[in-house]
Amino acid sequence: MPPLGAPRGTHDLLPDTATAWRWLHGVHAEAAELHGYRPIDTPVFEQTELFERGVGTGTDVVDKEMYTFSDRGGRSLTLRPEGTAGVLRAVLQANLLEEARPVRAHYAGPMFRYDRPQKGRYRQFHQVGIECIGERSPELDVEVIEVGWRFLQALGLAGVVLQVNSLGDLDDRMRYREALLAYYRPLADRLCDDCRRRLEINPLRLLDCKRDESLRDAAPVITDSLGESSAAYFAAVRGGLEAAGVAAEHNPRLVRGLDYYAHTAFEYWHSSLQGAQNSLGGGGRYDGLAEAIGFPATPGIGYAFGVERLLLVAGEQGSAPAPQPACDVVVCSLGPAEAQPAAQLARVLRAAGVRTVLDASDRKLDRKLRNADRLGARLCVIVGEDEVREGAAMVRDLGRRTQERHPAAGVVDAVTAALAAGRAA
RNA sequence: GUGGCCAUAGCUCAGUUGGUUAGAGUGCCAGGUUGUGGCCCUGGAGGUCGAGGGUUCAAAUCCCUCUGGCCACCCCA
Image (cartoon, rainbow, N blue to C red; front, side, top):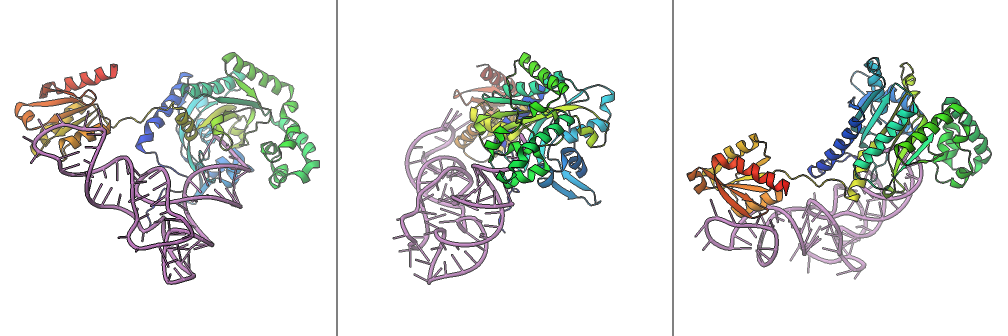
């Protein structure tokens, strides 16, 4: 039998990538919490209906990308393809709006979509995001977009382009739909197969097509179909972004793939992800979502970023931190007789908060030192026959290649002092 | 889901028109005599050449299927 590998489209987070992974999540939580967002965690699977009704049948995500299964009780469940529906469900189910309004929450976790894997595209991928639920005002749209913007800045990413658009309300979109149909119907025979299908199912998606670009360029734009209040709302959002110093580009052809969006929609693009997976993240207002999943109408807005893509770009730009070494100190015993005293010394160091690895192997000292060096340790504490006899230990600085013998009781102080000195330098 | 490229040691890759025991660099382990590392020298382990089938006297090399990766489409994070 051939060795089993990870399932297609999944990937393991190996120790070397953990540092950057944690860094990114820390930076996101910090940016969100700086704006008053609190952490929330929801199940990775939900009732299938939540996504069917929330995200919407007719979208690719629901129609052909969901991991749906039935459990032993015959319930139909689905591995979440996105985070918003679950977070909104949790907030409404727990009546959090009774205590404070709006509810601001941030989350991070795996999402699942059955799609053909590619670089920056996985079947299990990860998102960090925020949701601002319970109120509708342009200031909140600005706030959410700005948190995302600040987050990207804090990651040190250069070259991010922010695209914004307004999809208007239901009436606006109905009007726009008619305008689009009026434009595209006479051209139907010049459209690609997919687009002819979209024409019937979801005309807004015609704008996504890259094959019929020439037709698209002349197509009507939703901005022209916006009613007075929608247009004013959008203008307020754009004005707020400008005042915040967030450089946003109006892209009238930006439409998001999920059905529940209304009014403000936005995406953060990055040039180095050009073509294929150029979107680092995006979001928008979803005022219709709560009703779609059976709760009282509740406005909301949020965003989500793809962790793998952010890390891809941060890695290219060198802004992600290097892997953290395994430990600060390696304690080496030289023979079986010193194994116990060395182990005891390691315990004392750990109790003092020093990350310590014990090397009680029967390898030669030069190998142990080499290994300590590879582990990234800054110091090596050597416990040999002489040291045990004298109740002492040798503390060696691997960077400076100097060493000093200390009585056992003074080793912790010597080690912590040396580490602190190294950190300051 | 459609089309294309690819798959050789832990890693990065050679392998000539099918031809004997499949190589290099790096990494790993050990040695270069007593308890001192990142260099150097020597030796060793490690591959059913992604998996299965077929053509052939002979397959890493040619053909088919599958699996996986990448690219484009699609979709989006």
